Length: 366
Image 1 (cartoon, one colour):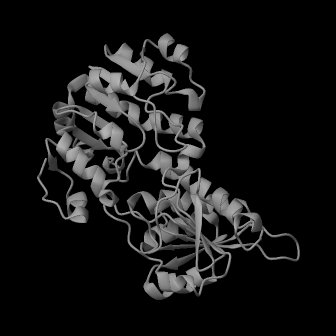
Image 2 (cartoon, helix red, strand yellow; image 1 turned 180 degrees about the vertical axis):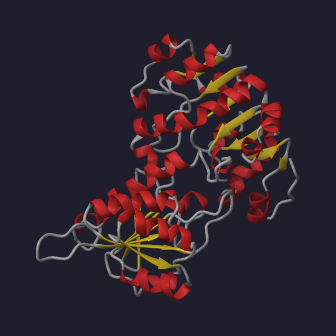
Image 3 (cartoon, one colour; image 1 turned 90 degrees about the vertical axis):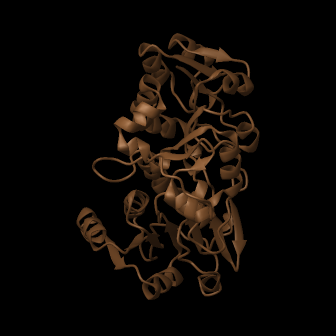
């Protein structure tokens, strides 16, 4: 199989679908790997690094899309890339279709086989291809939130950990999953007051045990969410319903009652966001302010640390990439029901129920 790796073109996206090490593994399995020139520059991987791994270097993305049997990316294909997809071609990347009807329409029309990292499951539970980026995003959320709380960034001008005689910031984390756990780890380490909200008692027990009481746990209901959001200096949302749109936990009405200069970092923005006022931003222009509340809504947060993110992602994706290449997508999905859960669109049909429901489209079983 010819595996194609185009350069990512989303604003300030520096990750790459395959590292030279991953390319070398694919070549060792008897496959060809074609990488667009300078695709790995953002992680410090040169064209020569890829050549040394046995990959071929293409002059343009058009060459990659025209030749490849399977495209391996990081972010969802942008409009110009979607036009280059063809019937039967496999696309393996993050898609986040529930909040992106335009992308879904184009992928349906392309006839491509679209497998989304974020809905591949694990025999042990969880989402193994989403987890590495959720770990990065959770930790980055505290870093980004700390910056946004600075006065020069529009925040109220407080330090996360405070200093002797001055209390630390109060950070409220919505969701005790991978994002929330990693955000709590970074926030507790910074010395902040930390509150984690979730509807799972087991998840809250895990947080309580993990942090030995240094993070408060609160059961998620409307009253508790509203009370804690209004008391927060920084709110981090990592709420996830696999493949579906994120629930709106922060209403527009709450904003006027939140502290002036407080911050919302919405890691759920890829799935539409957890606030009614959420809309995607970029690393080039990451924030906006509504009712005095700073919104940080960057849809590719891990792209800020592309080297860490790319290697963490490849550690998780490579076995699936090799399975798809070795067996072909049909056999690979038949052999692995967890990989099959990643199939979102195939041959012009939506094959993931939550995506179909979110977009009001017909669902077709894979």
